Image (cartoon, rainbow, N blue to C red; front, top):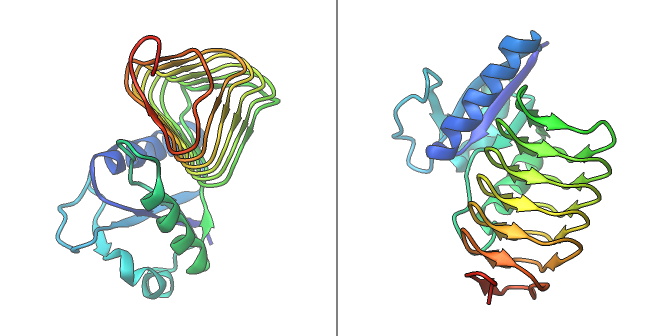
Length: 215
């Protein structure tokens, strides 16, 4: 049986996830199918022709009814970490599904880099050697992650963000669009780096920093 994927979430981020999955299938001939997506109210319109097939709460029932095998969390995180994404990821695993990892064909990912289950690497991303990316991570459009970075679970590296070599992002943090984190720094668990910020010193857990230099 081919892999049948459900996307958990039906907002703007789901549009990009679904398009990424389709691009992977078209370019590689991979044997998987996007069965549908969930929406909290079950009222969403189809996304790129993919139907809404139920609510998030109905996930366990949908696994059997739709013969689902894999899932992806298709909800982004704007700020304040990724608590919702972590919860939805846990729900997918609890329903007996395997996390599906998606790497856009235009991304440049070093052979020695490790990408965790359920993560999505978007178009134009660069991931350099010996970087380790955790589970359920978003590395968004044209973000750049240099060598030896350590990215925890449920992290969102937003479009155009740049991580220099040896950066550590702990679980659930968010690095905003166009932000820069200088080499060997750490961004603590659940912290937020605002869009366009330049991080020149490590950021504590739960903190929000902004500006250049980030404060």
